[in-house]
Length: 598
Ligand code: ADP
Image 1 (cartoon, rainbow, N blue to C red):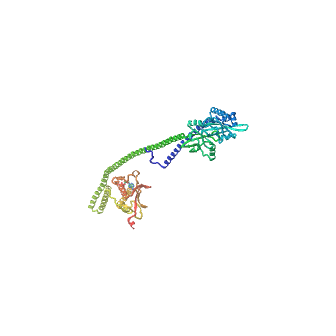
Image 2: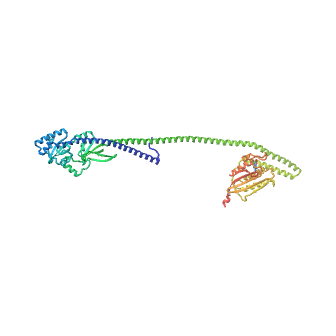
Image 3: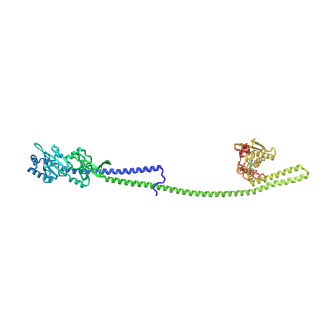
């Protein structure tokens, strides 16, 4: 199966493209939505974690907050400060007391500074890195306490190098501030706890320095550039010891409405919250892998679904096309079968037609034969009659001749000659019917043919018997034909007209010759019996006659019809309005070549 459609229109292509773009947009949107939801879920969980971490930090700090205040009221410490001697017996007693309290309170170090910032007693007085004798006047917690402010300060231990949170409180007597009590809390256990949790949590100070962190490599790095004044200050109070405070290689951006920290190629959703300590911000980072993974999964599923839908659509389209072409092929087959059937039918029809023609010819032939029999009787009658008459006339002529009546003999001879002429007419008609004369076309003057026919018939008719009205054209009109045969046609029409009026008192024949446009028209009209409507279709058939035996053989009109057709003309008949028949003969008139030569 080829999945690439063979022929697609631009419209269909754009439709597909549009659907594809829409599909991609939907898939992308679905992935984005999944990412958004996953980020929101992460952020909810992160906020909860943040609250938890904030709680651990607060409890770590608050736990020892009371210590400096309580110790500042201690009489031994006050005495020590009034003596201002870190080596005397009072100092030893205070050192012991501080050590015991430190152990009990689980703080890191407790120590007493005099008004100049020098340590007079400390809980670690017996340790190598004892604070006793060290001056911490540079530390802000000292300054704050001297100036009457309660102080909390994160720093890396200047003596121990151990990071911790320093809380201080001033010790007063009647004369004023005599010294400062400091409690240092070790923040390492808290950080270890965070670290063991395996999560990413850290706290930055007001300068953006990470000072508490579950990740060791982020500690004492900055999340934003530290300005020079702040840096000088940090160096001055040795807050972070010798740490370089290098910036974290951090890229900040926004994804799904959340802040994203990108560190070392890893992206984290960053949530932050103020801790309650001035400038301290706690950050909780959740790797975005999960979100990205969910999003990727959504995109992959979407892409697979989209591909499936796309392939499915193509497959369906292909199937539809195949079904259509199969349907078309079936239709074509059907048409072919129908065509074949039609062809067979046509062949059959042709065969039948040929058969029919043959049958028709046979029938004509049979008809002719039948007619021939009929005709033989008629001819016998026709010929016998004049022959008997001739015989009688010949016998009477012999008698008359014997009697010497020459004049009467002459009459008999005229009769004989007219009878022989009649016989020759009969045989002539038969001859022309039996042998079709070859058609020869000449330019013939129709008027001449008509005139000749009229003249001929006028000699046959008894003078005054028939009133002939001839409307001559007064000019020649030429047609293609043969003069003698045209004469034959008109003689036949005139004779039939005369025959139709036989026995009538008034016999009238009208002949018209007309030339209208390209038509040469001859009309022969009589006031005889007219054509019986039931015979109208047959009168041009051979051997059709209504005349009694001996008067007609029914060939005149049939032969005339053939002649006219041979010359490209036509003949038709109608009854006149009064009585009688009207024969209309039409030919195509031609311009004689002699006239063209002019
Ligand atoms: P025939 O004259 O030998 O009968 P035709 O073919 O000339 O043969 O004529 C056929 C028949 O047509 C005639 O017998 C006659 O009935 C009819 N017919 C021909 N001319 C006329 C006419 N002018 N008036 C009435 N009938 C006619």
